[in-house]
Image 1 (spheres, one colour):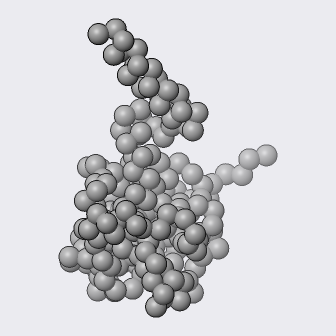
Image 2: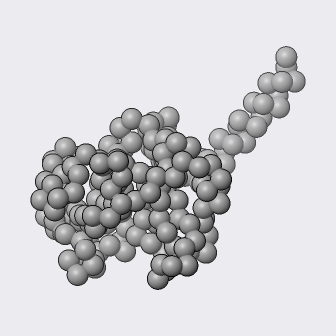
Length: 195
Protein backbone atom coordinates (compact mmCIF):
# COMPACT_ATOMS: atom_id res chain seq x y z
CA UNK A 1 0.00 0.00 0.00
CA UNK A 2 1.43 3.38 -1.00
CA UNK A 3 1.78 6.07 1.64
CA UNK A 4 0.41 9.49 0.78
CA UNK A 5 2.58 12.57 1.00
CA UNK A 6 1.93 14.68 4.08
CA UNK A 7 3.37 17.83 2.52
CA UNK A 8 2.60 20.17 -0.34
CA UNK A 9 5.43 21.83 -2.21
CA UNK A 10 4.85 25.54 -2.77
CA UNK A 11 5.35 27.28 -6.08
CA UNK A 12 8.92 28.50 -6.58
CA UNK A 13 7.90 32.14 -6.03
CA UNK A 14 6.47 31.32 -2.58
CA UNK A 15 9.51 29.24 -1.61
CA UNK A 16 11.82 32.04 -2.78
CA UNK A 17 9.89 34.62 -0.74
CA UNK A 18 10.37 32.49 2.38
CA UNK A 19 14.09 31.96 1.57
CA UNK A 20 14.74 35.67 0.97
CA UNK A 21 12.85 36.64 4.14
CA UNK A 22 14.96 34.18 6.14
CA UNK A 23 18.18 35.57 4.63
CA UNK A 24 17.13 39.17 5.27
CA UNK A 25 16.22 38.31 8.88
CA UNK A 26 19.74 36.94 9.43
CA UNK A 27 21.32 40.02 7.80
CA UNK A 28 22.39 38.23 4.61
CA UNK A 29 21.79 39.59 1.10
CA UNK A 30 18.41 38.67 -0.39
CA UNK A 31 19.81 39.12 -3.91
CA UNK A 32 20.63 35.57 -5.05
CA UNK A 33 23.26 34.01 -7.31
CA UNK A 34 22.34 30.41 -8.19
CA UNK A 35 25.03 27.80 -8.71
CA UNK A 36 25.04 24.26 -10.07
CA UNK A 37 27.47 21.36 -9.84
CA UNK A 38 29.61 22.58 -12.74
CA UNK A 39 30.09 25.94 -10.98
CA UNK A 40 31.63 24.54 -7.79
CA UNK A 41 35.38 24.72 -7.27
CA UNK A 42 36.81 22.55 -4.48
CA UNK A 43 40.54 23.16 -3.91
CA UNK A 44 43.06 21.61 -1.53
CA UNK A 45 43.70 23.69 1.58
CA UNK A 46 45.79 22.18 4.35
CA UNK A 47 44.77 24.93 6.78
CA UNK A 48 41.14 23.71 6.92
CA UNK A 49 39.95 20.76 9.03
CA UNK A 50 38.64 18.81 6.02
CA UNK A 51 41.58 19.89 3.82
CA UNK A 52 39.29 21.47 1.22
CA UNK A 53 38.35 25.06 0.34
CA UNK A 54 35.18 25.88 -1.59
CA UNK A 55 34.93 28.56 -4.26
CA UNK A 56 32.83 28.95 -7.38
CA UNK A 57 32.89 30.25 -10.93
CA UNK A 58 30.26 31.27 -13.45
CA UNK A 59 32.61 32.34 -16.24
CA UNK A 60 33.49 28.94 -17.73
CA UNK A 61 30.11 27.25 -17.22
CA UNK A 62 27.39 29.92 -16.99
CA UNK A 63 23.84 28.86 -16.13
CA UNK A 64 21.08 29.64 -18.62
CA UNK A 65 18.21 31.95 -17.63
CA UNK A 66 15.57 30.26 -15.45
CA UNK A 67 17.95 27.45 -14.44
CA UNK A 68 16.86 27.74 -10.80
CA UNK A 69 13.22 27.24 -11.86
CA UNK A 70 14.15 24.09 -13.76
CA UNK A 71 16.07 22.74 -10.77
CA UNK A 72 13.20 23.50 -8.39
CA UNK A 73 10.55 21.92 -10.61
CA UNK A 74 12.68 18.82 -11.14
CA UNK A 75 13.48 18.36 -7.43
CA UNK A 76 9.87 19.12 -6.42
CA UNK A 77 8.79 15.91 -8.16
CA UNK A 78 10.58 13.82 -5.52
CA UNK A 79 9.50 13.09 -1.94
CA UNK A 80 13.00 13.72 -0.58
CA UNK A 81 13.75 17.03 1.16
CA UNK A 82 14.44 19.93 -1.19
CA UNK A 83 17.10 22.19 0.33
CA UNK A 84 17.84 25.86 -0.33
CA UNK A 85 21.53 26.03 0.64
CA UNK A 86 23.61 29.20 0.97
CA UNK A 87 27.40 28.79 0.79
CA UNK A 88 28.27 32.43 1.50
CA UNK A 89 28.33 35.95 0.09
CA UNK A 90 30.08 37.34 -2.97
CA UNK A 91 29.74 40.80 -4.53
CA UNK A 92 26.73 41.63 -2.35
CA UNK A 93 24.78 38.47 -3.26
CA UNK A 94 23.94 35.29 -1.39
CA UNK A 95 25.53 32.41 -3.33
CA UNK A 96 23.04 29.53 -3.27
CA UNK A 97 22.27 26.06 -4.58
CA UNK A 98 19.24 23.80 -4.52
CA UNK A 99 19.85 20.30 -3.22
CA UNK A 100 17.67 17.22 -2.96
CA UNK A 101 18.29 13.80 -1.45
CA UNK A 102 17.09 11.42 1.25
CA UNK A 103 20.40 12.18 3.01
CA UNK A 104 18.86 15.45 4.29
CA UNK A 105 15.87 13.77 5.96
CA UNK A 106 17.48 13.67 9.41
CA UNK A 107 19.07 17.12 9.19
CA UNK A 108 17.82 19.76 11.61
CA UNK A 109 18.62 22.96 13.47
CA UNK A 110 21.69 21.54 15.22
CA UNK A 111 23.28 21.19 11.76
CA UNK A 112 22.09 24.59 10.51
CA UNK A 113 18.94 23.48 8.67
CA UNK A 114 15.61 25.25 9.18
CA UNK A 115 12.85 22.84 8.26
CA UNK A 116 9.48 23.52 6.70
CA UNK A 117 8.03 20.02 7.05
CA UNK A 118 4.68 21.14 5.61
CA UNK A 119 6.56 21.87 2.33
CA UNK A 120 9.33 19.29 2.85
CA UNK A 121 11.71 22.17 2.13
CA UNK A 122 14.74 22.78 4.31
CA UNK A 123 16.66 26.08 4.41
CA UNK A 124 20.37 26.25 5.19
CA UNK A 125 21.36 29.94 5.45
CA UNK A 126 24.96 29.10 6.39
CA UNK A 127 27.23 31.74 7.82
CA UNK A 128 27.88 35.30 6.77
CA UNK A 129 31.26 34.32 5.38
CA UNK A 130 32.52 35.39 1.98
CA UNK A 131 32.98 32.82 -0.76
CA UNK A 132 35.57 33.40 -3.46
CA UNK A 133 34.67 33.64 -7.12
CA UNK A 134 37.33 31.90 -9.20
CA UNK A 135 38.19 33.68 -12.45
CA UNK A 136 41.55 32.09 -13.28
CA UNK A 137 41.26 29.20 -15.75
CA UNK A 138 44.31 27.45 -14.26
CA UNK A 139 42.74 27.24 -10.80
CA UNK A 140 39.50 26.00 -12.32
CA UNK A 141 41.34 23.31 -14.28
CA UNK A 142 43.14 22.16 -11.10
CA UNK A 143 39.97 21.88 -8.97
CA UNK A 144 39.33 18.67 -7.04
CA UNK A 145 36.92 16.38 -8.82
CA UNK A 146 37.68 13.26 -6.75
CA UNK A 147 39.21 12.27 -3.44
CA UNK A 148 37.46 14.83 -1.30
CA UNK A 149 35.06 14.36 1.61
CA UNK A 150 31.35 13.94 0.97
CA UNK A 151 29.69 17.34 1.07
CA UNK A 152 26.00 18.37 1.10
CA UNK A 153 26.65 20.14 -2.22
CA UNK A 154 27.21 16.73 -3.82
CA UNK A 155 23.40 16.54 -4.03
CA UNK A 156 22.89 19.60 -6.24
CA UNK A 157 21.50 19.86 -9.76
CA UNK A 158 23.88 19.74 -12.70
CA UNK A 159 23.90 22.22 -15.55
CA UNK A 160 23.90 19.21 -17.85
CA UNK A 161 20.48 18.24 -16.47
CA UNK A 162 19.27 21.83 -16.89
CA UNK A 163 20.37 21.91 -20.53
CA UNK A 164 18.77 18.49 -21.17
CA UNK A 165 15.50 19.79 -19.73
CA UNK A 166 15.66 22.85 -21.97
CA UNK A 167 16.42 20.71 -25.05
CA UNK A 168 14.28 17.62 -24.40
CA UNK A 169 11.76 18.65 -21.76
CA UNK A 170 13.28 16.29 -19.18
CA UNK A 171 16.53 14.94 -17.77
CA UNK A 172 17.86 12.15 -19.98
CA UNK A 173 18.81 8.67 -18.80
CA UNK A 174 22.38 7.38 -19.13
CA UNK A 175 21.27 5.21 -22.06
CA UNK A 176 19.72 8.20 -23.84
CA UNK A 177 22.90 10.26 -23.37
CA UNK A 178 24.98 7.45 -24.87
CA UNK A 179 22.57 7.07 -27.79
CA UNK A 180 22.74 10.82 -28.48
CA UNK A 181 26.55 10.76 -28.47
CA UNK A 182 26.49 7.86 -30.93
CA UNK A 183 23.94 9.63 -33.12
CA UNK A 184 26.04 12.81 -33.22
CA UNK A 185 29.13 10.76 -34.08
CA UNK A 186 27.28 9.03 -36.94
CA UNK A 187 26.09 12.37 -38.25
CA UNK A 188 29.64 13.72 -38.29
CA UNK A 189 31.05 10.64 -40.03
CA UNK A 190 28.26 10.03 -42.53
CA UNK A 191 27.45 13.71 -43.00
CA UNK A 192 31.00 14.43 -44.14
CA UNK A 193 31.09 11.35 -46.38
CA UNK A 194 27.93 12.52 -48.20
CA UNK A 195 29.38 15.98 -49.02
